[in-house]
Image (cartoon, one colour):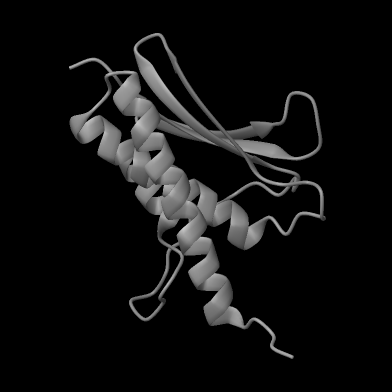
Length: 133
């Protein structure tokens, strides 16, 4: 019998976030969004998904959802989970190996935030980028 440890969890979370970011890249290519905006959007999505997977601890059957949209000259990436806790930017020490994701989101996004899910339990954390040059 084997049991997954923290290192296995970290690898699984990283693989899931990378796969979603890669899928986003394909969607953005179809939408003719490329370059720095596409790369930044992939990073933002990866960080939001990683944060949700690490901290949401949702019950079985309440998976994490991803939504991508464009409106008013902006690209929005959104990650929803069934946990009501709002994410907070941390100030990690130099020795901390984690805890910089939301600081990256805050630095790279035009704006970002968190809101209750429209039709369900939990919250949606989102980040936006400008599509205008």
